[in-house]
Image (cartoon, rainbow, N blue to C red; front, side, top):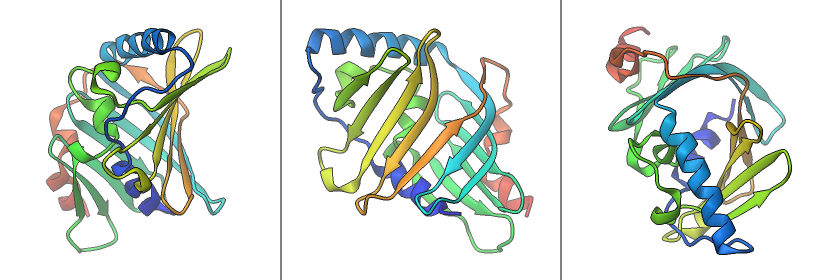
Length: 201
């Protein structure tokens, strides 16, 4: 499984200017998506990951604002990705090595996980692609534009986040498709503990 591409893509988002055909229309789209994301305080469901080499894996995910995330892969993959509000860690349940950690604030998922989301005024979105059935936001890091891109895909009628795609500098794409989503349930804080995941090995 190319989990390194999932993680590498987490560094591919910063702030940049909105570049759409019609800034006012783009601003209206971002306000609509802001309202949707701000109303989503927690979420859980199933995901499928598609890697650039044609392989795929699946598992369960949990999100809770602000800053908490957990992706647990189905067997035979032993990996769990956990964000505890400060760090994102990749825990290998088949290894005694310390998990790799990355600042959660340097990941694009921080954009989704922050307490209040303001896509337009933070300048996070580079461009918008819209069709009758979906809207895609494309983002890059203006301080390191060669580091890769992030796309967030939303279905329409009703508006819902359905997937994101990271592309690394080598052009390798990793797609996380949210196969299901239940929102605004009570998720306990301790399920997002990196230390507890390490102890479970």
